[in-house]
Length: 358
Image (cartoon, rainbow, N blue to C red; front, side, top):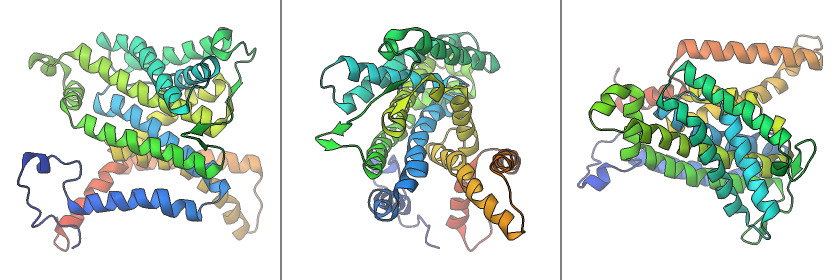
């Protein structure tokens, strides 16, 4: 009823190629961004920022980067945690070794370090694909763990690989409070998400999707597989590297190589699969599912146990959380294998034709 595009005529190619061609979509996105920047800071507590909002924003950014590689280009990667680590340690080295290095250039340079690292470990994609490529990118994870533990120069001669940053500042404003950290990460996410949305709709984005769907046919019509695959690795690694730098600098403050273990790589891959492959919006849905659901279960299970008159230990809550969380993932993938983004798309289509059946 309200979600109709009747009467919204386009009189130019530019208008027809808008990111949000339907007026309702455009208004909804602007309202959502306004709520995230204005309404949330008025209501959220420090715990809500530190435990949910800031990790959710940073993981959404990392999932967005992984989705470009896995969802849009079809190259399976299990080295996302390594790219995050390279971005974090790269930005740290620029801050530690260059006097008065601003935060934003440090994040960009850390992302560029992750870009070169991603291109290096993306070279096997020119010869192998599928599970073989997943194993090759998994090697990046093990290599980064060894590199940051054994080569002391990367950690400024720290024996354990642990580093820390403090006194973050952007344009003269201190990034110290939980609210300022959230707003800074959110601003970075919005900028990169808009750029990524336009990128996947451009010529290079269509090349990625052609390689994903059928690489032989893509090469026959003139698309260069080497350029398409390595550019996807480069863009994806840059975004994931910036997310890793934000994770270390803003969320953790102090970290060691174990903070970017292979668990992070699997979580990011699960976010992309559950949210929806080849969907920018799916990256946000998947990150929300993976980040928020365990916290909700952790708070809900003791309350449910209290209703039935028995207590559950902390270890029992942890085990039950893993069991329920895993079961929900399996159930969800059975019900909708194309992810939450597909459900969102189906819901919008039903709203277009309501009250008539589809």
